[in-house]
Each structure stands twice: as C-alpha cells, then as structure tokens.
Image (cartoon, rainbow over all chains, first blue to last red; front, side, top):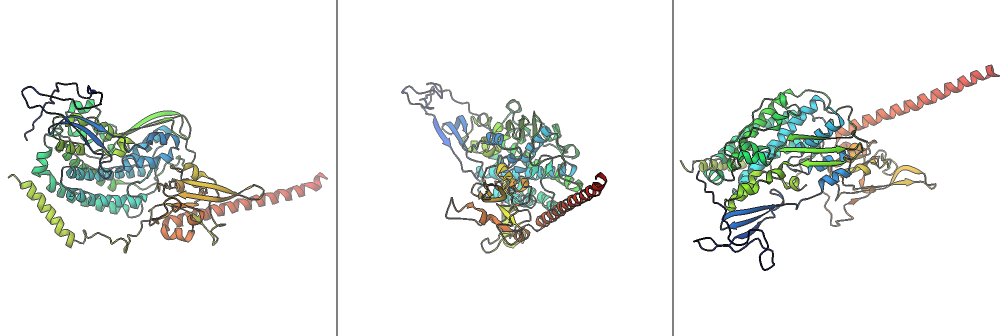
Length: 403
Length: 197
Ligand code: SF4
Ligand code: SF4
C-alpha cells in the first residue's frame, strides 16, 4: 500500500486560530506558499451527524485543498448530566442511567458500575452470577463489534449491506437479552452482589444456538469485507496510530491493541472470573484503520471461545449475594475505582461514598472519550474522506463521550 | 488477482439475496399491525398497579408508602396518601400518577416495592394525540387486576402469589400466636388471683 503523508503547510500570515486583523474572528488567515499558487485554507464543519450513526458529533476541519491540516472534535450535543444526576439519586437508581452511557453495550456498563459498588460495599457475587456476567459481557462485545464493523463500512460508502448483515446477527443477541432482562438495549440487569434475575428456562440452550451459528456469520463477513480491494485501499496505511502515542494518550481497548500493545484488562486485572477461561488477545501490527477493523473481527472469535467455555461450565445456584440490600443501601465511607475491558476500551467508575444513600462523587472513565482525543493526530495529512473512515474505526458512542 | 476480493464479496451478497427469498431462516419479517410477536415472559414497558379483589379501588395492594416515588430515577411518580375525615392516613393512595412520557421503563419501582403492588406492563401501543395529559396515567388507568398480571407474566405472578400467600399465612399465625399468648397470660393471671387474694 502506498501512503502519501503530506506535511501540514505552514501559513505565512497570522498563525492559524488567531483573530484576523479586521476584528472578525476567523480561523482562516490568507496564506501563500513560496513558489506556489496562492491557496486559501478552508474551514469545514463536518456534522453534526444523525444520532442513529455514532451520535451527534461535529468535526471542525481546516483543509488545504483535500488535505486536513487541523481538526477539532466538537462534542457535547448529547450531554445529559449523567454524573451529577447519579450523585443525586440512590446507588440503585443510577444503574438504569448507566445503560444509557454507551447505549450499544448496556450490560458491560452495568457490570463496571456494579463492580465498583461491590468493592465499596464489600459484596461478593455468587458463582453463577459471575458466569452470567461473563456471558453477558461477551455477548455485548459481539453485538458491539458487528455494529462497529457495519458502521465503519457504511461510513466508507458500503451503504447498508454489511451493516444490515451485522444487525441481523445482533438481533439474535438482543433477543437473548430481551428474554433475560425484559429489554433489548436498556437491560438494567446487573445489581450489586449479583444479577437481578436468574436465566429463564431454556436460555442457555438458545444462547448456545446463537454462539454455534456465529462463526458462519463471521466467515461470511470475512468473505464480504476482509479481502475487498476497495476496503483495503481505503483503510491500509490510513490513520496510523503509533504505539507510543497510543500509550501516552491513554488509549485503551481494541484501538490500543491494533497498535500492537498487548494490554487487555481481562488479562491484566482478571476481574470477575476471567482467569478461568482460555482465550488469546489479538494484536495489530500497523495501527491503521484496517488493523482496527481486523482486531475486532478476531476479537469476536475469541469472545466465542469464552462464551462456549462459560456456557458449558455455568453452575447452578443463587444469583444474588444474600447480604445485598435493595432498599436503604448505604455503603460505608470510602472511595474506589474499578474498571473492566468494555468492548470499546477501559470503562471505569470512580465512586466516593460518605456513608449516605447517594454517592458523594461519581465519575465515569469513558473509553470513547479518551480514544477520541487522538483523532486529530490520526487525521492530519489525510484526505477529508479518510477522516470519516478514521472516525468510524475509533468506535465512539456519543452517549458515553458526552454523558 | 485484483478484484478477486470484490467478486468474493459480491458472491456472498448474491447468496444472501437469493436466500432471503427461499431460506425459511431468513424469512423473518413479521407483518406488524396484523401480526404480533408474542411478548416474552420478562418483557417490560410501563408500570401498572395490581389490585386483588373485584373492586379496583379498595383492592389495590399499594399502601402509598412512597418508596417507589422516592427511588424512581427520573422522578415520574406522584403519590398523595388518602386521609380520612380526622386526617389520619388510610394506607391507600388518593392520587397515584405516573408520567409515562418521562418513565424510562427501568423497573426500579417494581424492585423496591415491598408489597408487590406495582408491576411492569407489556402494553406498548400507547400513542396519543394529547401529548401531555394523555401520557399522564392516573390511578384508574394504572389499576389492573391480578388476573391481568397472571396473563402477561404467568411465571412471575405465580411466584408472587405464592409468596404473598406465605406471608399472609405467617402473619395470621403470628396473630393467632399472639392471641393464644394473651389468652394464656389472662388465664394465668386469673389462676394467680385467688392465691394472691
Ligand atoms: S407501589 Fe409499592 S412502593 Fe409504591 S407507594 Fe405503593 S406500596 Fe409503596
Ligand atoms: S419504571 Fe422506572 S422510571 Fe418508570 S415509574 Fe418505575 S422507577 Fe420510575
């Protein structure tokens, strides 16, 4: 793959971003280049886009012709005051709000939050609940990654087909969620000290059918996209994120691993019961968009492995810690931070308790927001059309970025 | 060969296209207004209040303890307790409103209710031309019978009934034991009297 990296041109006029001389604020000073036709930078606002894609998000890009010389992500359109609301309601009542953080992965959001509160209150989920949680988290990962790949292809112009194939498979997973929790996306399922309900009869069998049929679909996806020359031309060598920058910027999740850094919290922290399962962590080589796409595809294979083991080994028993209280839940004063490997990266909750019924401080560490911070570094020097593909490969959900 | 990947992908699309006309696994569309997918056991949409006997007013299980009102995350429940002429609380809601345009179907109210008085409905065709008043469900619209509850969540309702019957039996036993204890105490006191006299 040939890549052209264009150095950002140095404008000879006022530095970019300073007010122009006539008093009007402008990002666009007149520029001229030595020995070249005088060109003018163009500022384009890309977005805000429709919520059904990634969320409402705008990129202010400054272009020299087709080349991006400056990019500013603008977000906050979906801000719902999540953290402040959670500080004003009881611990239990903010679980449904965590569903709405990253609305594609409510189960993992529940889990991260429940894990934090459990640490704060010293609760211990029973064995069966731990297995259920792992199963839910891996199903969520599958659902998230098929969506992501579909959206990535859609962003690059493959209108509909891959996305709809992905949605078709996600539908089956959502049916499983619905049978269990009563809701397809806003599951509100996990509780401090376990899970709200036991699996309904026959659920494990249905889940096995879904898991057994999934490889067929992954192969289909592989045939459809992985070898596609157009996809390769659009993604290979585009939006390269070096391992060094990724680590320095705090990038986590598949994005970090696509840059070749072996860091998976399921392996590092071994929260829950992840130490019991055998799975590998796929790593990328180049850190470009194609690697990020491929990592997700490979991760789905590993998730299937975990799912098979968990569905085989799941024991009988209670799903709630008997010490857990629903009403009048007041953990002792203290603070804690717990994190999990969400489908998008490290999702953590930081809680401070003053012994009352509400958290004194509640803070979310959203993977999407942190992963978005390197967007400019990845986009500089590429074409406008590449920015769309790069954004698609970051895997953001604005519910989580803006909170 | 250049273009091989594209051709391979196209073949996949073609296979899916043909499958969508012939493969029964892919003919999954449900003709919605005429056909319905049966609701799942755990399906939930908006809450309703359960009443036991025929009378939807006196039979309401709700005792207006306001726990659900306090716990509801978006604060969409409004309860006023009924009071008798002397101003004594009657353990019965006078007003019980749920604004379902705000409700986020989270089921927290169901979980915190100690009396199994509020449960989740599966009704979802609730469109209204009156955007504000029409979606504010008042007590009479929220009250639904226990039979209805059995119809939509048969497993859960049976569990709840068994639990309530159990609790009732225990409570009755307690009362009986209390009465018996009182009776024996009385008898003992009477027996003790002559000695004292
Ligand atoms: S529904 Fe339940 S929690 Fe709510 S006021 Fe009535 S009895 Fe109390
Ligand atoms: S379902 Fe949730 S939002 Fe709706 S009334 Fe109950 S507690 Fe409130």
